Image 1: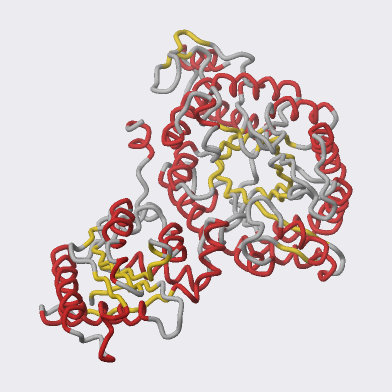
Image 2 (image 1 turned 120 degrees about the horizontal axis):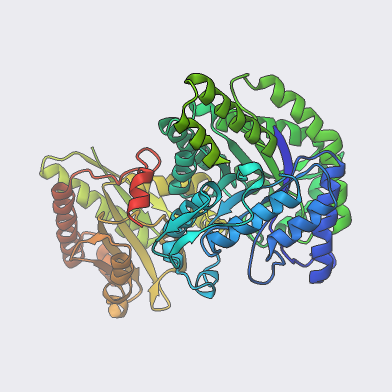
Length: 381
Length: 203
């Protein structure tokens, strides 16, 4: 199982001091947080994408490449990549380039984005959100898998004889997760392609996440990618920890009460009960997180939101120390002990290359070599 | 069994909005029974849900007793919606409750509207404010909307002549709509998702 962090890259005033970090500070903090995540043994760092204040999250591949250059092991991902308003050709090129630069430490999470004006700013219409996600991803999927693409669709200039460069590293595209809070169409899309499904989880009650994941698993099996419990599931989570749980609640409450998404609404206690937010001791976080499995099944990736609502960098780094030292090692051990052998781990570049090579070998063994087969294999390479 | 969800946005206790809501609910129940259809109605008082309604407006999802109320409205065969008139329109709490319902919750659903106010000068709020709200929500609203001013509750009884006539007429219209429509719950997109091939084809 993979553990990591995701960020939306918000510039939010610290409610306890009233101070808002500068864009420069926040961007540098994102890099510090990512380096810390690797240092404390986490597996994944995912950055958001926004094109409006108060976010500093545009140009995600620039951030990820910079982080990639200063880390060695951590997987670089997105939370999310705006598949609706970003040209799929640009996504194909940027993330294939990032794969090469980081030796394959790349995957992506597709999302639609819910900021109304972003759509017209990029020449799109939010009412086409689902259709944009479907058509743009269909093109991206082909650009990474076919050397020469002829394509015509509703939302983009047609392509004739187009080759997206660089080609994906080792001819294996980055693994893709499809993220959604509430659209069954996106769970259906993830299932159709046999891609991963990431449930945001943090803004809605568990019962809703359960419905989304259950739909995805059922349809994953329907489309022949494996049994429902082999589908690739990721979840968001949100925690704040101190050794003593009362201290955690006291320290986090002003950040919760003023948070951009749910601030000035439900109490911290209500929101903790209704959503996966856990504010307390590391042990409480361990128990709550292990409980996620009871309603989504064995899953492959757990990302935590740690650096939002104006929390200062120093606090975020302390939180990552606790997460990496006290929480994740226990979760790794416990989740591994519970997971049946036939449930796969989250795909990595290495595992996808190995799976592709194994499939090629078995294809060669299955029938005597023929001219046709050799040509097909050549064409793939 | 036909179920009717009665939404009352009355604030005071006792509330004339609640009295009108009960009258409309029981009149509809009686009318359906007379037509051979067993029915029950249950009243959802928004006052007790006011904080949860505000939380839902901010977070995007209903919790606790509000989640239960939303479910009862979604699953009901008909809705009776009654509000006090505040500042020339339906109350803010009444509007916020209908704001937080999922899109399509009331689409095609038979709805009866009612309102209360101190004087009859506000009666057209039903036609100029409330009917457009339910038209936007694509509800199937009965022609008669029932307005009750304080004086309509005269003689210590709701069974004053003209108010009870209006209640019976509106209840009859709602009962007819319910019987014509039958039970038609919207398809569940989680149980029956649109196959991806169709999503791809219909871009």
